[in-house]
Amino acid sequence: MTVEFTADCGTAQAEDSLQLYVPAFKRTTLVLDVEGDWPVLHKFSNNPAQWPQAAVVLPGNEVVFSLETASDYVKDDKANFYGFKCLVTGYEWSTDTYDGLKLLETELAFLGGMCSASLIKKDLILPPSSGKKFGLNKYNLVILKRFQKFFCGRSRS
Image 1 (cartoon, rainbow, N blue to C red):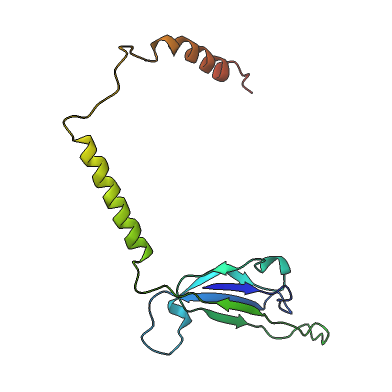
Image 2: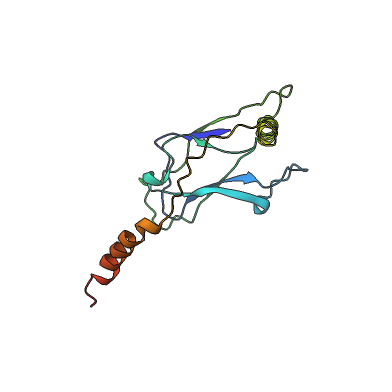
């Protein structure tokens, strides 16, 4: 599912916040218990830069909005605004087709089998070897000089 917040979301005080939770496990009862849920993102408060500017993709088909408020110690009636407005969009997978991960696993297993079968064929044609052996022997001197210049050439303070 996706959650998309509007631009006018905010809280009146820095202590007020909104936290999103997704369930850690499938619920067996209708009782909401936030302690067993996973928090999503961070707490959103009165700073507009903290609120998501784009849609947030959440796993599963359930989200819990927890708006936590503190006492009004400012006592400012003009600043008595808080809240959030969002659009939650759910998506449903087709049950008659393969699950995406199952399909990917099947394709990877097939590809791995084909590669393994072609590697153990007796008539496998390999590219011809030119007979040259490449090693680091001719480059050792150049590499050694660069390391010495880099590590020993600097003045130590």
